[in-house]
Image 1 (cartoon, one colour):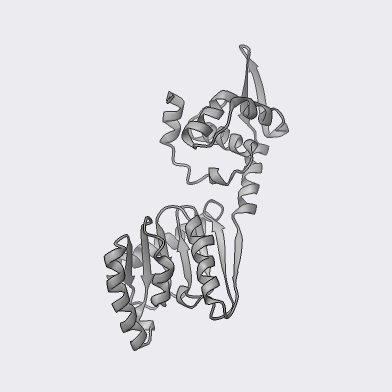
Image 2 (image 1 turned 180 degrees about the horizontal axis):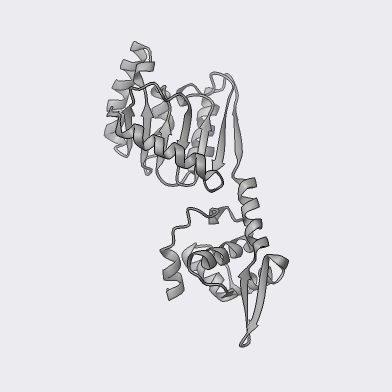
Length: 259
C-alpha cells in the first residue's frame, strides 16, 4: 500500500548516491534508505517498518521489518537507536555513510582485460559484462567505427545511445562500407544515433552512462585484435571528470552532423 513516505521517496533524484542495487546485504540497503531519507527528505529517524516499506515498495526488493530491525540493531556505530513511545527508531551516523561510500568505491572500480586474438570473446565481454550493466542513456566517444561496432550495439534496442565518431579517420573503403551498414542499421535501431565530429580534438574512447564512466583502451570495432582493457568507474565517486566529459560530449555533439 502506497504511503506518503513511499510517494516522497519515488520522486527523489539519487544519482549522487551509491547505487541501491549494488547494496548486497540487508544492512547496506537499510543504511542507504536512512541516508537518503536524512539528506534528501530531512527525515532524521525511521522505524524498521518504514525502512522495510521503502526497500520493498519503492526499490522492489523483498524484505521484512524484523530482518531490518535485526541488521540495524547489530550495526554498531553506523547508526544510533532511539527508543520513543514503545518504538525503536534508527538514525544513520557518519560511520554508516562512510561504510556505504567505501563499499561503492571498492565495488564500482572494475577492470576488464581483452586478450589479443580473441575478437569474439572480447565483443561478448564488452556487450554482456559492461554495456548491459550500464543504466540510462549511453554517450559513446570512439573515433573509429566499423561493422563490428554495430554488431556490439545491436543488443541496445531498448537503450538510448548517442555515438560520436569521426569517419574521416577511416580508410575510404572501410568508411563507405560502414556508411552502407549504418544506413540499414538505423532502420531497425532508431534509438541509436551516430554523429560525425569533424574537428581533431577527440582521441580517447569512453562511454558515459547514468551511473558509470567506462574508459576503453581500444576502439570497439578492433577489440580483441590487440591486447587491451576497459576500466569501469563509478560516476558518484568520479563526479568531476564525468561532469567534464559530459559537458565536452554535449558541446561536440551539438557541433557534429548526423550520419
